[in-house]
Image 1 (cartoon, rainbow, N blue to C red):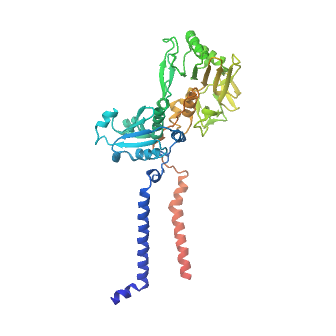
Image 2 (cartoon, rainbow, N blue to C red):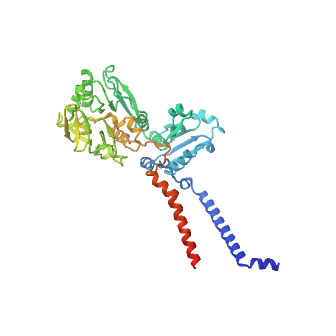
Image 3 (cartoon, helix red, strand yellow):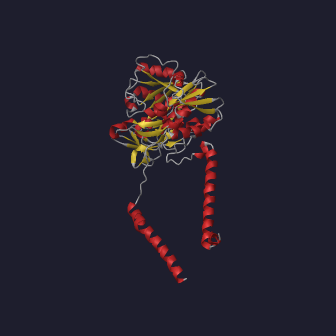
Length: 464
């Protein structure tokens, strides 16, 4: 016993015991912190460190959920333990934003009849509003979107987008809103087709889209809330022109996106624009002052947005290519007011084969006419490329789709525009500029610095 006592009275033993004690205390503190942290709600435990912020909930969603005054239930028909962690994490964060939103999990393996009850497949979220009784479904496949085209190159479909925010908010908006709008898209004039991303945005906003051939149908249906002409390549007939003019005079809403066919080749359509104070300039617009990487025909227009048109716009970055230009002229009637919301810089040019005419050109404008009977509206965007997938899919950081959806929603007084684009799941690679200098620093600079510091310490101790 005396030997043992003497052993623990040595300086080395005391230091060792002190170190062991400190180590035990540190471990105990870490265990306690982990236990406390584990009791926190999941929304506080999951920190979004992803480069594209897939768990970040948009201001649009936050505002919608903040105003929610009725109960909405998100019933998840899936095995919770086997569900993708990204979906579970997002649902927990989404649930925490409103006391009127609740998430309920039902395991379809343990309760197989639930799929028949809801008439859906497993791995589906059923969104139901108690007040309206309306419901809609959001599948996991529409949240974690896969790029099927990659299957042909790699043998597997890679994940491309995470769209939980957009899908859930549009579903909540749908079940809590009693407003549905019908948009008719003209056909028969070589019009372009809406891209998948724009069609998805239309659905998210409760817009029903239908096709309308004015040659076959002599009139515009009564349930048409907006008539959309997307890049027509051929002109309206005389009968179609009369139908559209009658529709506008009766308080109709029309939106036109001009394609690469000039209105000189579309005289009837051009006459409608001119009647409402817009006349197309000849040629394509080049803007050396506001262009993309010295390509003068790829333009970043100046935006003059206010009210509903400005919702969700933060970067003010919109890209147009092969745009036509509009000049503001006197409208046919004093009751018509025309305002621009997209323009070029003062250094822009309208370029033809023969000449270049400098000036400031309008790229987007809204004309309204108020009468005692009704209010009509004509929205014109001079470049259909605003919603061309070649731009919107390549430059996801731009706000092209948001501007377009705001312009659509601006035709309706009782609609809240939902424009939430999905987050990219494509891998991002870190690239190092001036790799040669960086390599020299890593291979030689850091080791020399460490050795030099060590030698300095050794030399000082030796002299001491």
